[in-house]
Image (tube, rainbow, N blue to C red):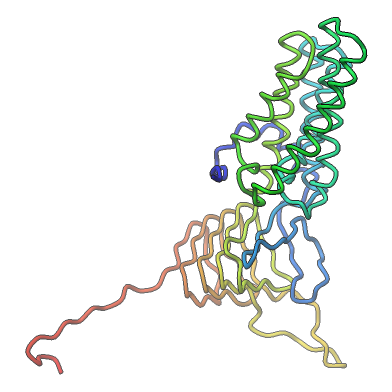
Length: 319
């Protein structure tokens, strides 16, 4: 059973931290798919069968969670926590930015996270056991058991039982990660709560970043080289962001001039819509299915087809 993806707007608790994060990450996406040479691509593509999804890159996710961890560690220091606790808090938040991608065995996050999670869980568990005056042999055995459990039992379960952006890629999974860390970590209750919150917050920063741009059921989507796409943009299957025409140089090669659409923030383009030329689709605009659009539209517009005219005949009338 797959848990639902976080809906738009449910992660507003991160707004304060995201101001710092997105000041160093481009606010728009400039894609160069038709040439195969990206100019600025702060997203990455991966395939799930015949469905292509666009999400934040590994570098973006780790940058986002690291900046969030630095801010959280600074706040913790100013509220009276010790420097080692604050450093550990920031580090946990940074690492948590990779965790939602642990459900993809082809991703860089899975390869690094499964070992990192196993090692981190072992260290925290051993630290916890030291409080119970157990023998060194028992602690070593428990530590080894924790590493093997995370590496093979949890890692194997994730590989067999999940799909990317499935149940691991959800808010309940973020909360569960925080609860698990609270259970295995040592220290006072406020320190354990802080560490658990750090994991949850880093996890949520990953989910928030993935909501900034997505292609749903992206089969047949065409995005021109000079297209510019804002935040929270959604494209459905068969959408084309193309050019009406392009100039050629003396050798007959296309001149690299802006010729594709600009989609501002929160634009939704439904299936099989075609948007051509260097036009601007204003913020919050909805472009309906099977629309052919070659002119700019102001913000918060709705571009829809005319309603079909239904005619009924009886007893031969109207024929």
